[in-house]
Length: 90
Image 1 (cartoon, rainbow, N blue to C red):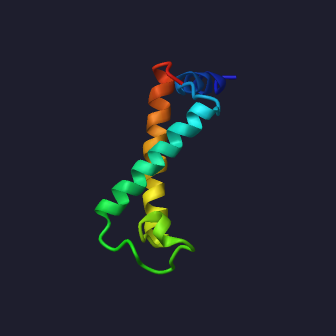
Image 2 (cartoon, rainbow, N blue to C red; image 1 turned 120 degrees about the vertical axis):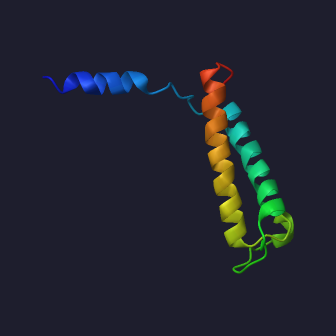
């Protein structure tokens, strides 16, 4: 069983992640709001087609801009949740 040892070393290097809770959901929602705000400020063309059903709710953003900015929000949220969990705050 010489292959078991590398896998146990790898498993011990994986950080503990936070289980889902309302706190985790709130952090992810806030990070997505930040991502949408950054996308609204930073993207050159936010109103490209296809449009959203209620674009005024998202500041006139189209579907591609919304998907791009919420993707950035999820990346920010992932790092924030992992960081807060490793500090013991979540």
